[in-house]
Length: 342
Image (cartoon, rainbow, N blue to C red; front, side, top):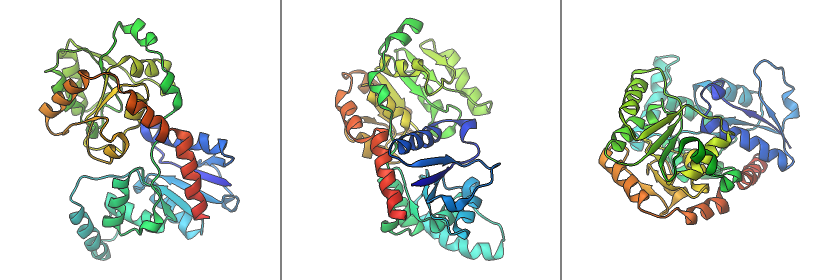
């Protein structure tokens, strides 16, 4: 099978979970005998050589490519990477009215419109969670038979991560940890920092803060808190990142939503206790083996962290992740979905 993987242009500029998802999907599909090509906008392709394309993210960046594929009769699957906390009935109503509005206001499109159009043009949708699939079904009217839920995954190397490197460099063990794109408001880092002000325990924050008002507010709080060590973003393959996961006691991701947060899966694979948002399908992955907190309530975030600190390391969750969410398992499910397309 010959597949072209297509990602947003910004993917390596912001890095993060989507980059990890695309790269690992490619690597493990190759191991299954699939020939994978990463789309390069500056190259000319003979599209007839591909059995199908796989588009990652359904938004304004990928819309024109989705339209090109459809008009060229090239089958393609889409990993939407889309979740929204707005009322689903309102979104559904908006999309119905949007069709009328676009007849009057040419070129008028929202994120929901791009998602809707790409979903209609695609051969198959591959959401990361059942929650995302239900959103596509109810709000966009996508039939169940067109949807295959493909979970996000984690690399098995994190299971054998050694905490000693991080402990030797920073002198810390059993601390509170968060990792990610800290400048993204969705990650809710400012609320986390406010919660950490009320916790007398060492914390480590790994990631970049954007040069924005929000980023500056976060950095000011980090500097004021004597218990926090901030480390600039680490490469995903940096052994120090693995070691930080293995050395921490609690990993926190109090985002407004996650689908489900690859960093949390990585931390879980080292045995860390997970504190996470309940929104976006996280409970499908972590079930009753995590502490769920209200991202809009600082007290809830604080209490969830304190509860997680009081527990032993979560080897039950570690086994659950190994059994269900490693990239070889994900790649096999992805290949099965491809076969349904062609």
